Image (tube, rainbow, N blue to C red):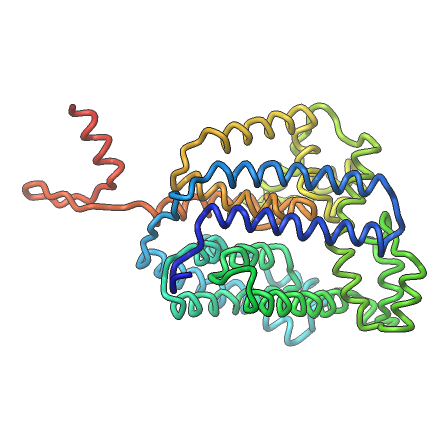
Length: 419
């Protein structure tokens, strides 16, 4: 692979499919070996896999080998990235870091004095969308590593001081799939092993740090696995717990990570088989996303969601909250619209922006709805807009006494209109 060049869009879609396959195999192993066996869970697991598989393979075959990533304006990107990084670090994350150093993770997450937002939010909202675009820049590796290092400063703060997982992991998935090395290579294997070790460490650290038990009765992985609410509808075999406790207790964080990835299947199965959905939805989750964007009080909406969905707050795959919002009829309509779009839309810059974002969402569809809970709808829209703006190509057109800057698309439209 040439130094500094990104992998192709077609290869990205293929890697997204393999990510879906790997996560589904982990879930299947957990459902059949580690957890108490329930055939219904396995059926739902295959159902989720085949939906994601269908759209990712459709995307893969839709993209020709000749399709390439747009050429991004590096100077504009660099300016936006440095500005958003500075605002995010100094104004958004610094109060969390100070609270974390004073109180620790558990109490800093409860501190209402931090995280209120402000003028800087309009700049910091650009940060994570720009972090995704880093993966698609055709730049020398040294420059990529510089951007990546700055990105990791914020991500590590979010993981360690805020205890968040969704947005950091979501962004890192783009960089994982865009790795400028062959996946079937020794280097890729080493990177994946390091990533797994990092995930286990973070799960161990965050799970203990976010629990009040760490400060009261003390931490016990056996109690966490037996009584944590992510195990309510997907119990781990008692023989497995006893064996690991006796032979290798160090594996408990790995079991917890496997459960963390898999419990969403059982949660979705409960809602699906209990017919918790209507033909027409109520858009409560969507209203909550809008409220998050405009900054209104979300209490009433979240209380209504909790009444509708008693397991609100847990991972329930991509589909649960969407079906709650749209109902079965609306969900099927959305699936058809997406099918038509992936099949017939022109593979231009805007199509690629939507495609790469949705590719990751489908790749992790068996875990959570990362359309809502990855970067959220607001930053999804911001990502599309930033992608479009910094990939536009501008030319300078001179008019007597005036110098105008027009996009090539605009000039092409003007030329056609005059013919």
